[in-house]
Length: 261
Image (cartoon, rainbow, N blue to C red):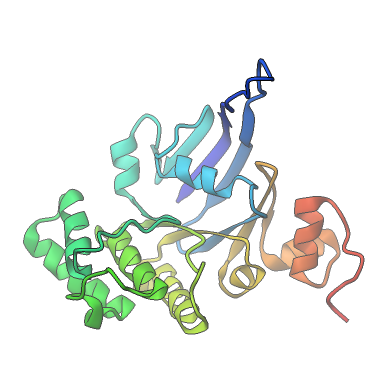
């Protein structure tokens, strides 16, 4: 389980020479939400809503100015090793080593996570079957398609079998078949057969949320403005279409034309 309470982050903005002092950029303000085990939680918002900054704080890459972030009861700020050991992160920048094979990329990360060589080999084979990447294992990642890169990066994030998984816009650049395969994988990981993992998925794609997420957190202007299931958010806004409900929640306006007849 992942819990955020009152998380806030400001960034200093360099001042141009003609302006003596620039106001700090409020990237995230008083964000609170909970992602339960065995569910996919969608973090939904327009570009610049604060989704990526929130996930970077969750992953320990950026320090929050205020608030509390916990992973399975461990505080990311005060117990980073314990918290991050229970977290697998797929960021928007996969960062694969192009001269290494997929197997070498994944195994290297396994050793960094403290797995023995034998444990790493076993996990690589298990994940290769799960993600259908066995034909890729001994190919250099240089020249991989976006879908192949995403699968390899996801295997790397899952190598230590974390109970919590965070994905920042993972379907960007994927074709239809690769997107469907990733969705199927995430559904399996959230199921009891896949370990009942807690999955947080950042996206701005409506279909992604409707097809995949058990609950949704809507972010706008750095704040968490609503949360609930797709159906409950539609009911809350009085909209029959989720895209229209999102426009109401994120932008505070009722769409002029409904997409539903």
